[in-house]
Image 1 (cartoon, rainbow over the protein chains, first blue to last red):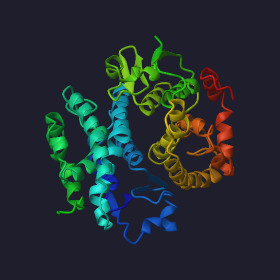
Image 2: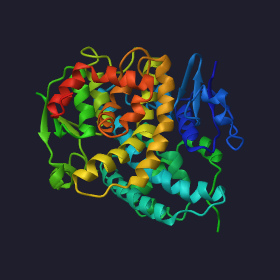
Image 3: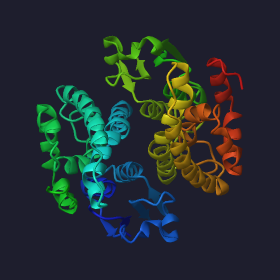
Image 4: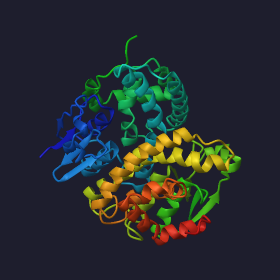
Length: 219
Length: 215
């Protein structure tokens, strides 16, 4: 039976999982969850993820939430096919992949998600973005990207010379960020820009990005 | 050769790694990084940890930072000794990862600014943002209710055994329990039971003794 992913292609965290499934050439079924009708807050959904968020993965008896735990599971289960996303054969290399995945979780994600929330989600709720929050987080994001610029001067990808989960986890939020007026934060850093363009050239990205349909307001 | 941990025994993120070393019975050496003089922001440390934070490790030629990545590496490297922190099957490991990620994305995002305001700022003579703390505590209550429900039917977060999912919570929990947030934990029967079990572990007691916080 194919794995089921509960969620929608436009959700950043769902897209993270879909990218992984495509990289691992794994069949799956996407089960849409109507977030506008708050189906993710219904008891039937909360029994799968008590935090009431997408994505959720179902693989036979296993129900899993947290997108990065899901990607790690898929990458481990299907380690013998598709892209090697975790460098599982070498403990030290695997640790470096995990290190840069943690950097994404703790340094990159809080800053970029705060910017995207203000610039894309808040207007959808009919409210005005908080410019102070945007500015504060753009500054934090800039400092993180400075570290990336230096790292990507030494290795082609964040954890070394091959694409791994450490790079993949960044893709969905960065895709939305590049639609905002602050794309210069990436484009002004040549190594980060080249890295991003490479990530966008991957077949898995080309399959998932059409689903990332949310956009900042044009005004 | 013994692994060197750059950091200090009283700081939460180094404690995460130290707990892992203690649970796995791994020898280590702590190389003190003086946070009071911002040694972590100086060029020598930035070479080890480009974000200017602790901990970082050096194990011969091998260098690593991010406490959760370090703990994961050593739990894997020494899977045959000490406590099994990672889970016994692919599916169990995924559940461990899931609750470890919950610590990052739901618990730590609230616990860290609470500890910053209630513990660290007073120590530095800075003013605590009391309004922010109350907002954070309200959000934390919602998260702790989910933990309470989970721990009602599971002895530990990922099932019947202590794993990385529990360990990764312990440093911040230790600090929170020294503030009035401890009432939020004590008011929840299963969370209270879980915390008492965690703090009864010999590795935790050793860590607290090393940090000068006798239990």
